[in-house]
Length: 379
Image 1: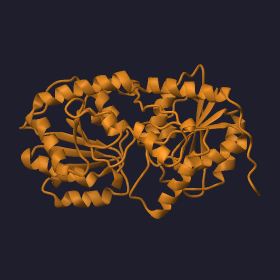
Image 2: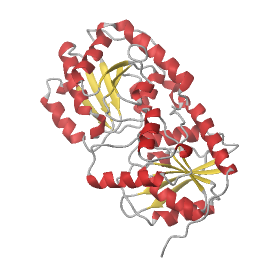
Image 3: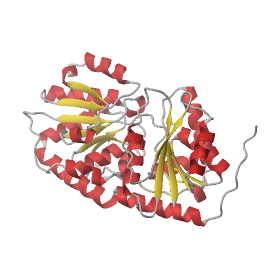
Image 4: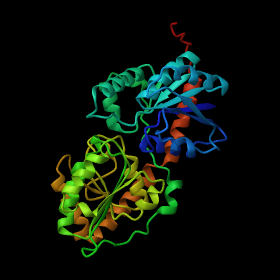
């Protein structure tokens, strides 16, 4: 069985790391799993291609002129035919559009995995996302990562017969070397080392995180906040941090290859997103043994039960979020209890090995169903 993963990388974040996790856990003896990525310019981060395991399959680069280029369709078809690909597996609105056209032209099956939908974006990006959602209506299978994404996709017109819910998973083999010994380490004198890993973009709600941390710092002035990642909002967030009394305790570390090594030194991980699937960053933190403080939104609520596997605050209530951070310092035993329960949950339910097995089963089913007809594009 020959599968081609196709993604248009926008960095090295959740979707890109997800592709690596799947490749690392698919059974190589039963499946060849190549990767195709678009090359959109010198500033593009192609870490997913650089780190893709050779044991899974080959990496193919698809040069494009700018961020969206329909000539990529023919280039992708050439890869599909040269490698005798059976199924193309797409990730993101651009890859869904280009992948669908290539799959139909080549006469193969297409599976799409939505990783979440951005909000608070410009009209041009909103239009492309809508086009990507329209393309999903013609996919052979759409495999959302969370129950909320299933609901969202149905609202956008995706049929029940197309949907296959495969719950998100994290690559535990990547994390085992970084697992923290679970113990009581936080103290009022030392404060809390709070961390975030991900994109610095509006839907992540990081202005709220800075405000919440500022309240924590006023209570425990040895606390610090580290933000790992980059994005369009970085300059704005740095400017906001400079206006806060706690600004000197806030560090913007940019993109880091050693994010997991840094993660294990956090006393807590914070997530203030307004929209997520099932966040991979939270699963990684839970597996490593870092307690979670987050906004209570769909997707997050699949991982965090307040007071059991983490601490939650209502979306937008950064004062309440700060109160939950303060609890981790004021109640040292709480961190241990939350970390233990969270790690057990990830180990039992959210492993990438389980996720990869479900994808393998889906691919086998598709290959056993009738073959799709070729589409000839108009001149």
